[in-house]
Length: 238
Image (cartoon, rainbow, N blue to C red; front, side, top):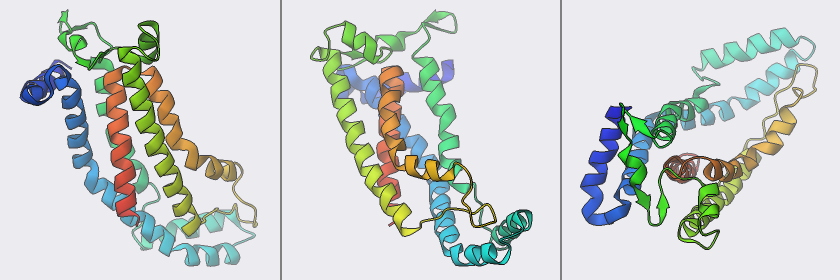
């Protein structure tokens, strides 16, 4: 973790002439962008995989009709079809999974009072009036919503809400273009999948809760990554 802390400090030093006391916050945004650039090839592959799965839906529907009374045979046939077409059902999960280590590194880094037995100097950095190691509850207790730190969170929440609304519309449109509700084999949908499908468009709004409870540094990562994802999806799935 000390190596990662040194990386953030070096980036902050490079950005200090432009961003002053908020250089560490800018460094986190830049770090997030670098992570997303590294993950972008996986995102492109996931988009291609999604389009390929959509193209396979007529064949999948035919398999459902053919094996409607044999769920096990249907499952094997669908898996065989995906294997033949070299389409992975899990490819869409890889971009998110690859970002988890970076998020937890930031979370742990800005939740630790010491690094390598020494005081964590990163905790002294701020985004305007809000300490990067602080949380929304701390901001509410130090000046309230209209205090310096509180205003920073209000702006973050506004950005997240805007991105979430955009993602909601994008997800609804995408699901309308490819309404896929896998069958259990007898014409009935898989139990619970209908509820998941209904909840899916609202998943972006859960980011608001994440931003409210994690350290501000980790919240910046989440906000930047979420905004990147929204723009990326709009481009790749157009």
